[in-house]
Length: 234
Image 1 (tube, rainbow, N blue to C red):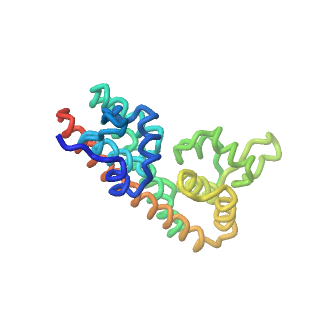
Image 2: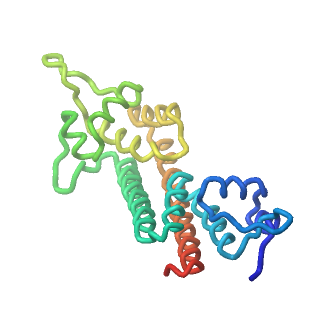
């Protein structure tokens, strides 16, 4: 059996040997045997674990990656793969939201739904149902100054327009990207003032980020399959 020195794995993955020790301490990589001099004796299995870790981190995050690899160590491969599948489904939903947002931004006169004439005034419940965003989130975004619906002078209820719907869709697209709250506020307010070119550019950049994460996820899954094959679990 061939053994790998920590420095060999670290160089291949472009990380430090201390990072390898950290991953090992997290319990996401099996503890290696030790040489008489105390040095770690990493094997092809450890290399596969480390490759998988490094591939999955940017695609699925540290928390989910660690959870998946602990499941793999326990032999529960099916649960591990379903967790990954759920995250991929979430990304697909996010991509659908980004596509819908861009479509609305590119055609401000686009109806809110197929074969349905847009209403000029909508309740928070109607807006929540159309956008797929909980009304509590809409209220939070209003509190943060991202959207500013008017109020019915008689009953005080919020009044939403098609413009607010487009703003909410844009926020939904951006909330899991690299953009900070103040950037979102600037873009959402641009929609309100009919300056949508910048809003379109940000939404397009968000879609580019989603595409990149999709590729990263597939690479991470590839390394996960390679790991399972190395372990004889496939």
